[in-house]
Amino acid sequence: MTRQKTVVAAALGECVHVAGVMKFLRLAEEAGWRTIFLGPAVPLEHVLEAARAEDATLVGVSYRLTPETGERLLGEFAEAADDLHAAGVRFAFGGTPPVAERAAKFGFFERVFDGSQPPEEVAAYLRGASYAATEADFPQRTVDRIAWKTPYPLIRHHFGLPTLEATRAGIEQIAEARVLDVISLGIDQDAQENFFHPERQDPRRTGAGGVPVRSPDDYRSLFAASRRGNYPLLRTYSGTDDFVQLAEMYVDTINIAWAAVPLFWFNAMDGRGPHDLETSIRLHQELLAWYGARGIPVELNEPHHWGMRDAPDVVFVVAAYLSAYNARAFGVHDYIAQFMFNSPPGLSDAMDLAKMQACLDLVEPLADRSTFRVYRQTRVGLLSHPLDPEAARGHLAAATYLQMALKPHIVHVVGHTEADHAATAEDVIAACKVARRAIENALAGAPDMLGDPRVRARAAELVHEARQTLDAIRGLAGPQAPDPLTDPATLTRAVTSGILDAPHLRSNRYGRGAVVTRTDRRGACVAIDASSGKTLAEEDRLAGLSSHP
Image (cartoon, rainbow, N blue to C red; front, side, top):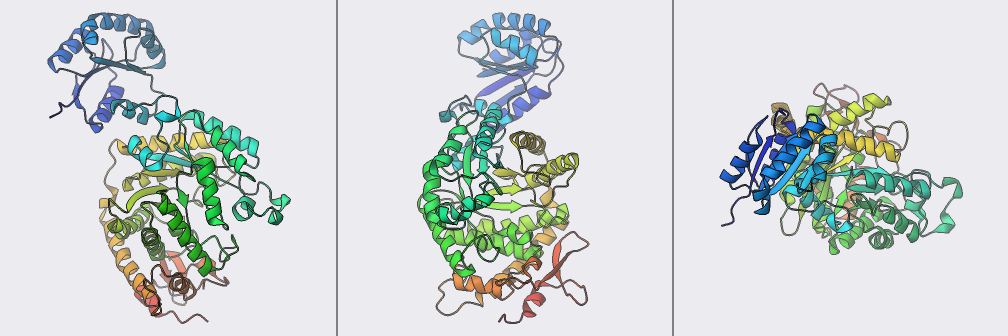
């Protein structure tokens, strides 16, 4: 049986500051170490005695006072510990930057931490993994990077400026900052619709909504810009036409981290693509199969597209289930379930969490370790940031802390500048730092917010109603549909009949837009009777639907 590694740690000499030591030991415990905390202001002889008595593999010491005094003390410590060092015991130091700079000059300590290193770098060191400066040190596949970074989630942020040159320079700056793991390239609308159709491109739209990529080499140049710092992964939109052709190019040029594939959206229904609803559903399912066959993870961002259009919470939950169900049915093995909070923005935190818990209660039973794995990705609501930048920073921090209740594998940071302007590289770095701090605080010991009785009751209510809605969708299928929940014709009728509906679809040629919603006293988004203003139970809403011409 392999002996558990032991780390002994203390604050040396007269230094009484042990917060950093405790954080180091907590990370060590999570990495499987046996930890011995000796306390503050420990004489160096006591540290070495404990290291010998405990048969320590690693000794961690800290000093956060005067650099000159620290240098003298650490010199004495290194000399006294020479026999342990020669015997293979490892030594690490943590302190303020001025003391750490002097500690590094001794050449005695295996690693020196000055507080600027991200927690995942310390965690990687304790797991025996590298965290240096070459691409080989940073996993370049999403699932591998999730495992490598645990217990910290991957950090993702959207980035794309109106010119290729500015975007390339920004990616270099973001990568060097080492604050995120995934850059989601925001490409302009023409690139999403017409990349392979230059005759359809409109020069007046260049840069509208993101970076104007027009050739595979443009993508290659953006990928090359990311080959520095912590070598972040890249991903981008699936586009609204020529789906497989785009996918092939993404794999070839940016080693796409994962794909985002819609089910009901990015087509003629929302004006973002050329295909009608049923055709786009079929094409998106084919794209799921293409990515699944190549082992590339996929997310479906369906739920929040309904939520941002003020759909009732139950429709959001049903969309989450249909997304995962279709991903599994069409061969996706690593599924990224996205949970956009604050959609619509008026939800209370308790009801927001309840909605997400209901999604998980329906989606996670679909998981199978060998064929269909579910990874949780959370994010701030796209429409929820206030305009004031300081208020937006506060919202980003609070919303990120709330999201951590779901124990996400990926946190999609939506920059605090979103309500005012597209994020610059500086904005991305600042937003990621805000989110990272909230994440660190939560991982240090957040309360069990999912255990709140209000959250549990609402989640159970939503699961019950979602099952009714799914049964109603199944009832639309014709005899030729082997599985109504994957049949494009049935799924299309789920929209045209009003079973899946949102107020923003009013006057839409596919959606009905007949549902009326409001935020109730609990902070939940519910359907109401338009004439009386009373809440409609989902069973009653479904019963009141008439056939759509």
